Image (cartoon, rainbow, N blue to C red; front, side, top):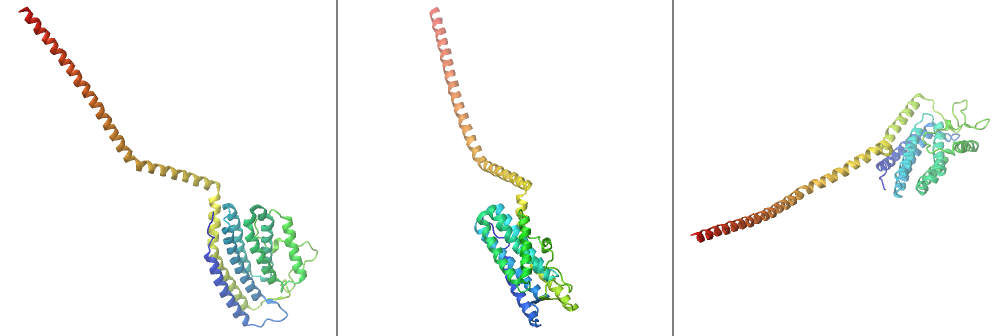
Length: 327
């Protein structure tokens, strides 16, 4: 059973929007000189996260197409589409977070945990149908770690990997991942390297913004990003909701009833179409049978009348003969 992707058009739209976002980011970046001691300013880090979210959504859409090319069962398709569509929406929401430093950690968690869930939970249950998704999430995981590498030092990267691994190990039954964030992954260490510093940030490699005008422009860009990207996923949301609705037991029973009613209607229509021919044939057969019966009765009546007349004539002749003898 091959279904169309939730909304193939949003793949092209995302690519166009991503291109425009990159151009806008290049203009903003050209207005300032980034100090050498910082990897990013917060607006630059947020722009990188927005670009990553758009790439994630595009790769997720392609993974759905690849899965559908394998013609999976309806339940398999529904599970995969739901996880990918919701995770793409999660990536867009994370990229628009007012704290880009926390958003970077959330984005790493989303992608890495998604790859782990599909490898350990869905691959044994769905088989090869899960392979395109695992390949896509593995690709995006390498991408997000490349994005995080200039910001997180080796100790911070190690702690973040450790938190994700321990959480997944303690929750092997996870089948969804789009709603988990960095705050859901507590540290097992006495002293965490991923805590906010007195200056207000988490990473010394990211410079914050303090100007009111800069913060206002920052807020407008986040709002514009969310308002223009999330609607592109509405086709995917509609696909997920429709699939779940159709798999509901009550709806399934109604669908079966409607199907039975449709079959009964088709049979009734067939009988109705054949009815005039059947009536004509039966009427002709009835007329022929009545004609045969009338013909038989008429013949018998004539024979009976002929025999009666013959007997009466014979009796009359006898009476005449007897009268002549008397004369």
